[in-house]
Image 1 (cartoon, rainbow, N blue to C red):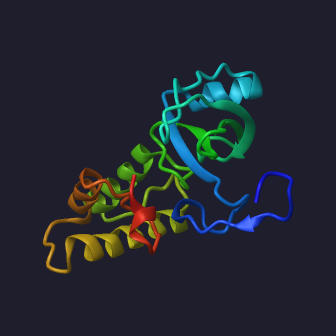
Image 2 (cartoon, one colour):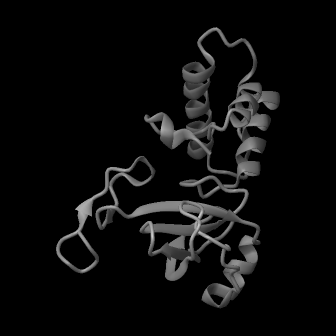
Length: 181
């Protein structure tokens, strides 16, 4: 289906199962070096730099509006810029680097939480305990799944190895394509 030519169809692409986009449209996340606090202060007036070309097909991109996104370090949602490629029909979202897709906490904050738990055997007092437990359980499952049951290192070592292998170490995704960075 084309834009505006009928009802939206369910996308069966692993990156966004459950979203309603026209058939054939793929959503991709592009990391850019921007400060989350600058985005929060300037809102839609933030001066985004457009990528030179579509990473999917290499042709020009068009600005495609904004999408609200939440980050753990902020109390309100901020606007992230989207781009559209008319050639390969992909929609790209610009996201601050240092954050994995589908996570509102930074990679550094998650690593520090796992490190704190590994070394001090306690949860960090400044973060919600359920969130920390969720990351800990997901990391344990992924370490056993990817590195094997016989893995003898700590979960912190497993975290580092999973990142080196290109995995999001605290992902709950069941399909392996959705666990990749």
